[in-house]
Image (cartoon, rainbow over all chains, first blue to last red; front, side):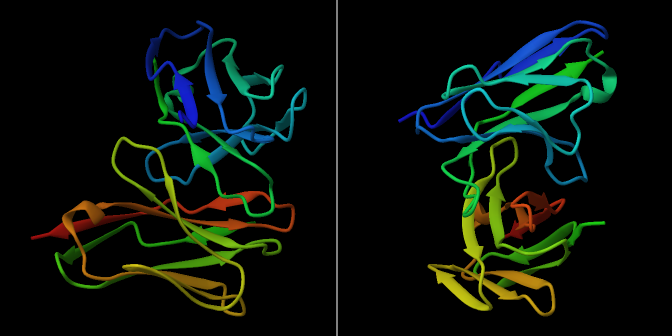
Length: 113
Length: 109
C-alpha cells in the first residue's frame, strides 16, 4: 500500500528552467493538494483539486500550474523557476474535505539556483 | 486575517510531560488538527477536535476550547522518538486548512 508517492525527491534547477512534480495516490481519494513548506512558516497551499479534471488556486498559486487528468495523479508544474521557489513541496490527499485527515507524500526538495 | 500561533520551539526531558499550545483566529471553525512531522519527513495525523473537550489517544491528548480559540497537545511519558515538529491546523468556514508554523519539540535524556 504505497499511499501518496511523489517524484522526484530532490531536484536542482537553474533560474528559468521548467519542471514537473508528480504526485500519485492509490487510495481513490477525491481531494488532492500541493503545499510548500518553508522554514518558520506554516504549510502554504499552492493549488488543489476536488476531483478528476478539476483544479483550483490556493494561497500562493503564482508561478505554478497544475493538472489532474487522472484521479490518482496530480501534477505541479513550474514553467520558469525562480529562486523564491526553492522549497520543500508536499502533495497530500484525502477522501473528503470535511474531516480533512490528509495523507502526505514524502516531499520533494527543490533548489533553484 | 487568519492566524494560528504556536511556540517555535520547546525542550522537555525524556519521561516527562509537555503541553504544546495553539491559539487561532480564523474565519469560521470546522475542526482543529494536530500533525507530527519528524525532520525531513512528511506530516502525519495525530488528532482531530471539533467539539470542546479532551480527546485522548494513548500517550497523546488534545484539548479544544472554541470560545477561547485555543487548543493544546499533551504528550505524556516522553520518548526520544517524540522529538519532532508538531503542527496545529484549523479548518475554516470554507473547509480550507490554515496551518501554524509548527512547534519543534526537543527531547533531552
